[in-house]
Length: 121
Length: 113
Image (cartoon, rainbow over all chains, first blue to last red; front, side):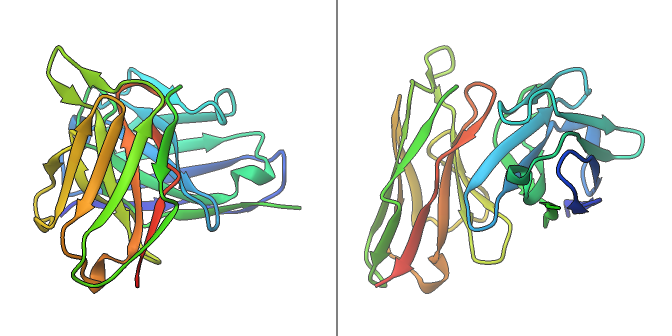
């Protein structure tokens, strides 16, 4: 059974930084691209970032480009999202999401439970 | 970037009736090289994470009831629930994965009439 367990969320001040982690199990981690998708309170889904299985290609949404960095440690089956220069509009539940493919970003076949990030003073 | 627009924003359907949700992309997400439409549909029930229903616009994910079906090509797509059940109350999202950044529709909230 695929399990994706996010951690690292919490309250942070505007301009601050936070790093999310996602511990994966139940599948061969380096055989899957991975994504972060967020959902602001009461709002829809927004794709944030993706990374290929090998980690050699990364992709970002326009709203986070230059502020967020996605990475992965395949030896630890863990996905990360480093978030810098956080803004109030980054407040959301952040989902770790397993991609169906390895070398390209495609559809998401498994989702974590989410980690809440609140940006407020 | 590709913009995905769903209609309607909300929908109320009687139990046992058909529900239809539309999704339109700002540019074609069909590739003639493999004859595929790069579109997925997800269901998000209240308080839960999203769940994959359909990919390649019309391929049902394993375990998804066959009352769910996807259709369309190019820029216009439809998710149909042939006979609405109480457990289908949820918000439904389409997603294009043709190009990055990937993008979701704004969601369609489905309720029981």
